[in-house]
Structures are given as C-alpha cells and as structure tokens.
Length: 412
Ligand code: CTP
Image 1 (cartoon, rainbow, N blue to C red):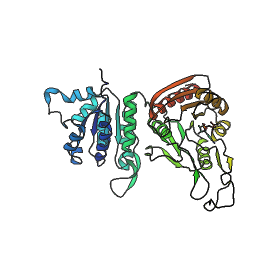
Image 2: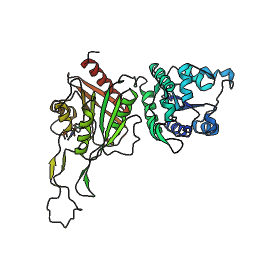
Image 3: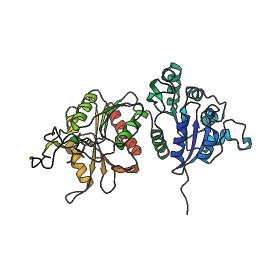
Image 4: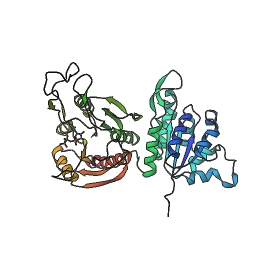
C-alpha cells in the first residue's frame, strides 16, 4: 500500500512578541499530519523556548548553521520543504530576506528554498509604514514571496494600529492553499478594487426572532482573503457568519438585513472593478416587523406574512459600470424538474452576471463545511468544473477566471 507523502513545512519564527502565536500555527500544521521543522531566530527563543517548538513539532530545533554540520542543514532544510512559513516576520527578517543576508539558519533556509514562501509580518505601525520596510516588502513580493498584510488592532502595549500578526487561522488557511496549489496567490489583482459580500442576512420578525439561513460566510471570507493576497484593495460586506477571523488588510463593513447589505454593496460598488455576491441574501422579509415580541395568543392569524426583497445582484448587473466584472453564486439542489446544472444555467441567464459559481447543496454539502465543489459558468458558454477542495481553492479558481475577464475587458 502506498501512502501519500506528508507535506513538509518549515516554520520560521522571528523574534517578536507574536512568536507565541507561531505555536498555534504549528499545532494547526501538525494536527493534520504535516511534517514540520521549526527554525527560529536566536531572538525568537527569547520569547518562546526551543523545548516548546521541539515538543510540538517532534523535531530538533536549531538556530545557527554550526549544528549537525555533516547534514548541511543550512542547505538541506530549504531544499526539503514544500512550503516555508515565517510567523512572525519582523521588520529585521523582512530586510534580511529582501537583501539576501544569511547569518543564521532561517535566513540561509530562505535563500535555499525553491518552494512557496509565505511571510506573515508583525511589528509596530511605524515600522510597517517605514519606507525601508515598504521597499523590502515590495522587493519580496516582486520576487514571488507572499507577504501577508498585517491586521489592525491592539499592538504590544496599549497602542493600536496596523501591524498585528494576521490571525493564525487565516495564516493556516493560506498555508493549506499554497500546499494544494503553489501558484494560487500571484499578485495579479494589484491596483484593482474588489467588493465581496459574505454570510447570511437576517430578517427580523420581532425584537427576538428573525428569518435567516445556514450560510457560514466561509466562502466569502476565503474570497476576500485571497483577493487581498493577490494585491486587491478589498471591501468585505459581511452579513451574519460563524466566528471567522476578519481577513487582514480588507475593509470590513457589517450588515444584518438584506436592505442593509444592499445599501453597503451599492455604496462600495460604484468604483469597484469586481463585485462578488457570495452572500446568501433572503429573498423575502416579514411584511411587518413587530415592535413587541409576537405572542402565540396574539390576534394576528398569520404573523409571518412575507414581502419580496430586491435582487441585489440583478440591480448591480443593471447598473454595471463599463469594464466591471460581476460574479454571482448559486447554491442549488436538483429537483424533480431539473438537475443542479440546469437550474444554474437558467439562473445565470436570468441574473446576467459575468460568472456564476455553482455549488451543489444539501445533505452536508457546501453549508458550514470546509470543502466545496461545483462549476464556474461564464457568459461565453464555458462550464468549468471545480474539483472538491477547500473554499480557498475555490476562491482562487474564481479569481483566476476574474483576472482573465479583466484582462480581456481591458485588452491587456
Ligand atoms: N442574490 C441577491 N439578492 C437577493 C437574492 C440573491 O443579490 N435578494 C444573489 C446572491 O448573493 C447570489 C445570487 O443572487 O449571488 C443567487 O442567489 P440565490 O439565492 O441562489 O438565487 P435566487 O435569485 O434567490 O434564486 P432562487 O431562490 O429562485 O433559487
């Protein structure tokens, strides 16, 4: 019996306070069975001890190039890896990597690795915004290194700003994407404005009840996250979702009802190059929103009379700016009249969007699960199957198709 090789990951750890979060990333890599070598800097070991990394990875930990010399680790570790992650990447590490310095095991590894390299920065806002760091990040990105955007929020002290390490769950999501698809994050959306809606709307019946749906928001968040990494300026209009980390680097606008989501999407859509409607928008809302809790002893015989919500996607298509690419989603089940694809083709014609991403739903498929499969329907009639994979993988296929359309539209 042949077993699938375990993905091999180098986890570089820089000397910043966020080094403790590298332990969570490490757990997230070893739990699904990845082989992980942790390569911290000397400074990182002042924040987290080598014993922690050794115990969690099951492998020895060294920082310099003079341990295990006959094994030539300063070359072998980089050659061995399917993916190198650096969590956190300090300003100093970014500078060393950009200039090809190699004065310890991690910086040597960065020079010898030929696999995808993802660096997740964490530092104070001033350091992130400094011209030196900006130039180093630009150099690394131009060479194909994926440098994630830091999150905004509480920093080491009482201060807040841009520079927090992206959420470990977000880093893991991107790591899994790169292991499955090493070329998934080119910077081909640089200079583009993208609006993504995500999650499920809630339509209140009274102060305590609402009509909702089972959308988790994961697909929309994966779309926003991957678009940020591909260089886009992203606005995520988020309705209700499971507890998900906000995609670092995206502007997040919260909306609850279909009406609120509609307003937020239209506002952001005016100057967007791409709009992706991944939100599950309620088609109907209660005709009346009761001011007080509805009682079963109440006089209204039908307290759930409904009225139609506007179709936001159809409105966006009707108001489309020249060159704008509009993507819709369709969660379909087959029925006695037609199968999933037949329903989807009819919806694509009806909605008039450039691309329609089709998911088969029901019986544990698509909602609240990690993996998705489906089709991508284009207006030129192509129907591309999307193999079962993570929502980030599906997102990266959607962005590939969007980029092809943007290039076609703008003749680039
Ligand atoms: N959509 C929207 N506004 C609505 C309903 C849906 O913008 N009021 C968008 C969704 O975000 C998605 C697409 O339309 O991108 C398809 O949603 P879906 O609920 O599958 O389509 P419906 O038009 O509601 O069709 P039906 O309920 O008949 O399947």
